[in-house]
Length: 218
Ligand code: AMP
Image 1 (cartoon, rainbow, N blue to C red):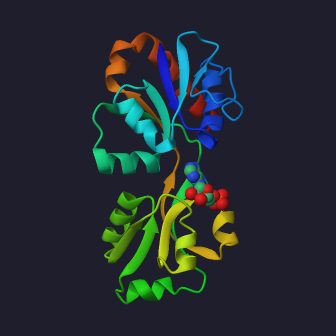
Image 2: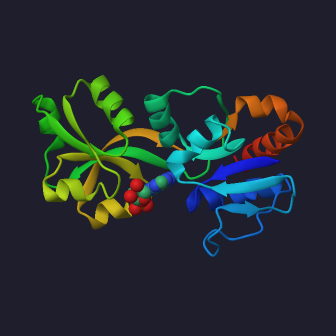
């Protein structure tokens, strides 16, 4: 059995065409079903639905053989736990967005950075934020949040946030502006290294089909 870990939403939806290119069709809609294990048209392939930040953990420890997760999630997972036995063969170029710094439209970020002020930065992505500001030589107090980072500068909890931006609509709706582009983000295929050896015959064709579909879409 091949087990593929996916998170619901954009990653699930954008992985479906890649699965189709490997001849795999998921037989239930996760938005309608309460099942956590979804069957596919292949009796030897199943999909497990996990939280995005749990995908690397499932794949690393063999709860799943393969998974799809954002580069952001991988960097944070790696910073906290390291990566042992996690192979990252492919940038799938899906769920694209960017990691950015945003502040209230009336906050003078350039001046704060120039004057060497200590910035209070709220984020879920503490490893990425720490590395970014350390490289810039800006002193930061990091405030770890798990949701709705946009609220932090509006309530005075923080001066700035580090968050994923796709259309920019969420920032705009909350009177925030992007002041730094940290990195482009897309989702990656992650594979359990031991599974790649043991289940080579069934995993390789799936990885190769994904790779072909990605290069065809560029
Ligand atoms: P947007 O309004 O389109 O710029 O989307 C921004 C909101 O969606 C923020 O709350 C982000 O944390 C979240 N977001 C955007 N892109 C992604 C992504 N690829 N994966 C997870 N969350 C995302």
